[in-house]
Length: 133
Image 1 (cartoon, rainbow, N blue to C red):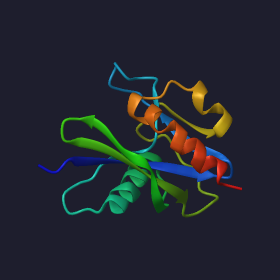
Image 2 (cartoon, rainbow, N blue to C red; image 1 turned 90 degrees about the vertical axis):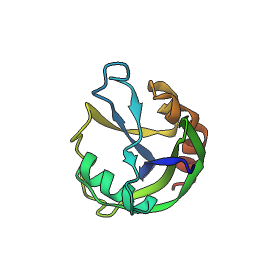
Image 3 (spheres, helix red, strand yellow; image 1 turned 120 degrees about the horizontal axis):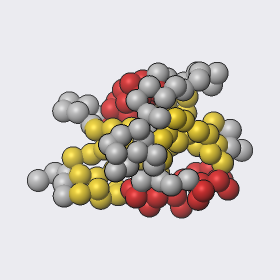
Image 4 (cartoon, rainbow, N blue to C red; image 1 turned 135 degrees about the vertical axis):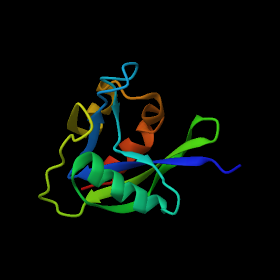
């Protein structure tokens, strides 16, 4: 059986990455993650990521290359993260489904309590941010 995919967006602006804070469920409330969600039937991974960013942040993104490898979440479920940029650089993402948003620099990545799957991707995210000038 093919694994179902959760996509995540590593949205970079300048030298910072956008992170969002979970409001629920209670066991992960307050933890940080990248925006994203499930790939629905008939969607490509980039299409799902663009849809999720509109739903969660109220912004449109341009999807770039993969960041890091597949992160197993549980049986038959993997997280795949893609680099992304705001289609309109002046757009202001809003926390429509989350407790809060924050732009994080590479040096501050380790200071947030990330969800375990996102924590696994910190080295790749740090590399992504270092490549941005």
